[in-house]
Length: 202
Image (cartoon, rainbow, N blue to C red; front, side, top):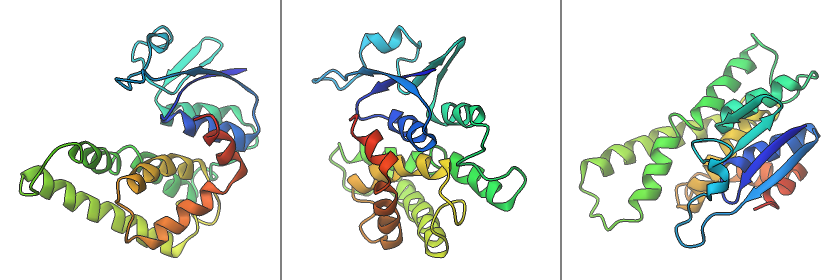
């Protein structure tokens, strides 16, 4: 059985959500952030040297990084659920969005989050660059969700799980205010029972 080392308010919600969608058994071990520093506790470092969540342990396999963990879990599911058939157009769309969530989109969202912690006048080079990336990436997302219900096409996939966490951060910091298709999408996927169960762990 897979053991999930979960840290509150972290990307490990992706892993719990995936396991709930697949109805796979797992053991949950909770770790809590330091209430002052918000850093992960030493207990996570004892599991993986990066001391980040999520981390899973399955026999001799110990994995960090939510994208890698999700691929590992999907490989354990013989039914092939939540991942389009390899070689299909939907499969390549799935791969693009699976990596887009932490690649192209991760940088402007996290940068905006950190920039909002500072007093800025909006004239620095970083403001212009990140502003351009935000407009480009969220324009692409908005257009995609105008034409299909989920990122890989007609069906919900693990790429939607990867994207949702990043979109939630974006929504929290005000990046979705004029993006109605993205807001509607976020409400729909957050209404799934498996999402609600994963979110209940904090």
